[in-house]
Length: 241
Image (cartoon, rainbow, N blue to C red; front, side):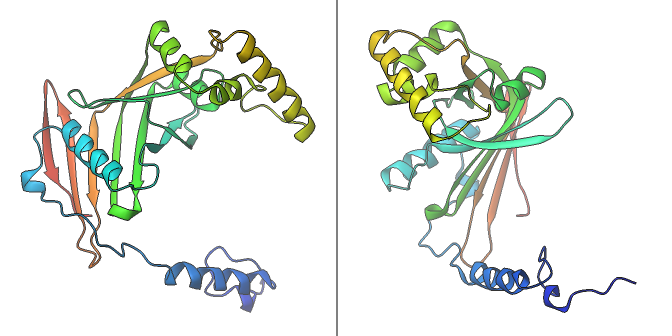
């Protein structure tokens, strides 16, 4: 029978030897870190709008007004052809609050682009710790037209456009020297041809089928409201958090 290492006892995911103590110390720090410290904004689900788009706009507007750090940043989750999930953080590029649709951009050759080509459905998640709020939406994804793509890309800063031309996304990088060489070439390209758009640049739109709004509470009596698209309208229901 294999002996269980005593140092790893009680440390989920811990390894044998000295690292188990470090893992326990890290876990103690995690448990001691403040959560939902507040003050948090109020939320009355009974007074929420009939459709989720306006509620998203209200929550995002308040986050911007209260200087919540980077509330436009969200997590995009996709799945590959074999079902393997993948998530990454990126920027919200547009909102259609009337239809509860959300716009983001990426390279068609990236991992997310390849996933969406074979499984055009995704989820988006926002979390704003300062407000104790989480928003989750999921639904089908479509590709917007060439003109939208051009406007999106050319509306970015020169540095952002140069970054899109630097190297090939998601492919191996040899090191800092190669990075710097490619960066200089990309900056020169953007300066010489400011109207050029990368061939793979793509703007996507997720049209939510479901939307969930989570309001945290310091006393742990959290609130969770789900909207579900049904035909031409929406239903909504409270969920146990």
